[in-house]
Length: 167
Image 1 (cartoon, one colour):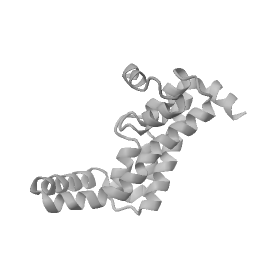
Image 2 (cartoon, helix red, strand yellow):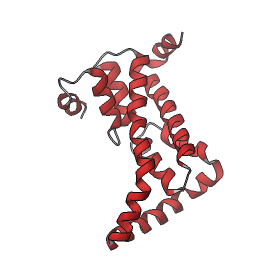
Image 3 (cartoon, rainbow, N blue to C red):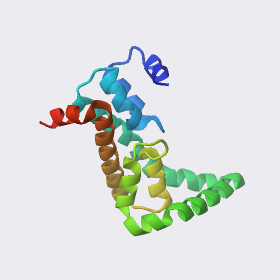
Image 4 (tube, one colour):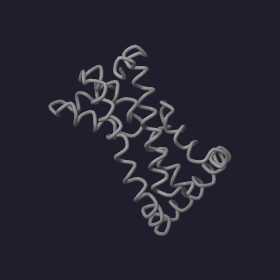
């Protein structure tokens, strides 16, 4: 999988490649940061910044446009209306209690967990589904992405490598 992304981005400067990889759903920062550190040999600070920036950029557009796009789809397509009704019911049923109990911290932690389907894209969709204000949702998602970056950096470089970066 990594080879596919790297081969697809051949000839693109490393910084741009890392930004683009971090924007891809599911892959996000969790894939971009290790590629930046191991394949492109970027220093940790540069790799971290590019991975966080690339991962958070789509969130802006998701938060701004998912509501109007879904409203339009629901108005103009019966199948989409049924889909969104199912999605809202299912999502609110599955995670409403955690969100109500922990609020934006739950959103940040959800985004920070470095597993597939728990990143910034899914966090932005969850923020929209729960009616979180865009500004507050963005801040929680940014905190989660930043924390995910620390976790992935620790996993990629090891604790000693990360401590050397801090010192």
